[in-house]
Image 1 (cartoon, one colour):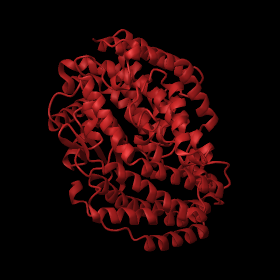
Image 2 (cartoon, helix red, strand yellow):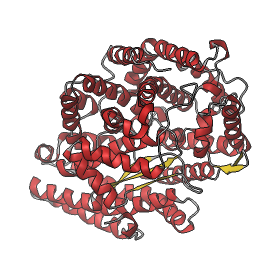
Image 3 (cartoon, one colour):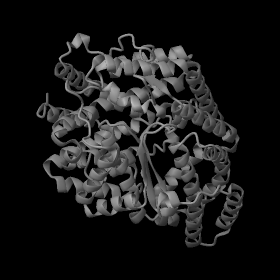
Image 4 (tube, one colour):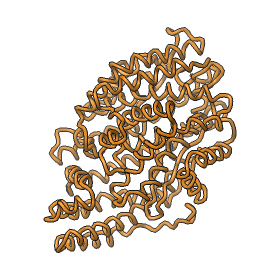
Length: 565
């Protein structure tokens, strides 16, 4: 069914609550494991219906945040979802306490129960009002961000539409674009500060109510960290500082040299421009880029061919930047229709191609898991695993990148590999900043900004903001959606990037073998923990000591051998 034809009906949460009560009572009275497995399947079907409708609404709301109907519906769903959690909890508790648990773990998977135990720790009915308020604040941030109408060079643009100007070959234009972006955030400074302050205090209150010292612990549980701890994350960040940050400084020194800018004069204004004559940009219109993406997936494998036909036949994309559209890009799932959906803001930069590889990597994994994993709750791994799907696809599609970049392909390949290495310390910066913020919720907005600048020096020592508004005062983190909307969802990208670089190294040696390993990883969905998934296909887990050093050194050496002016 085409996306535009999928009917939206406001989910009936009251009826769902009654059905959940009934399912819980039947589960408690069940006389066999077989009966309980059947009831669990009913429970999944019910959640699938609710999730599909709420997701349809959410997609249509982000496509046009000015649409009053979907804004109201989205607010309603955000109010009701935490209340529904109250009804899910007794069902989970009954399943966890089942006298047939050993048999259930055999049928449904041990990891399902491990994950449910984490969900139990992350919820209590008393925090429902706080969860509702958290959703409201997150929506306010998205709406404020999407409201940007920035006057620039005689036009009015959004934050996303400023992207190409930040990569202009004219330094004054790059600087002007950053200043224009900064002016929007500076003009709305009080609102951005206040929203974040309220979110930090709200999440801290939730954590305390659940018996945690801070939101750091609750945040890790909410991200379903089922195979490593915040201490493991800190160790990973330390490895990045020790073994990768010195390489990123070398990458930036090379970039300055390519641009013909003396190292001492290289500033944040120059950060996004990879080459003197311009960054590698896709050749063609957005429609032509989409068509090239279709051809790429038709040729990559039989599975990707079936997948891309599903996406095009059912119009499961909304990728052009337009007024009123929420910022960013994402892939989500519509379980009742067994199909994914890709949302983005194309702006004429290489990021448009990254969407077709990255978000389509998520969508492809969703498409495969719907066929290979019987228990829906285990169809998707935790987010480091899910981001491995998408980030690895960016590299595994390399033989087709010429369809997008033509004679600029070598430039794109180099900057893509460099950006992968540069990203990891940035992601660690975002994670470390959040840990500091939630360990010290009493920080003022100014103290938070100072902490950000301090951590910039640790993870990106080459950055010189050179008096830029907004960025120069340490507020640049406010344009990073995840910090407001999805706390602690960023280190996942860093770990996945390390995984993707392993797949890339393998593909350079033997493309078919790399694809087979990737498919073996994807087919398992979320039936194993992230660490076990990595080891199951003979790859190293990023938290294994020495992994960061070996993997990133190999990728850096590849860039050294493929330099382009």
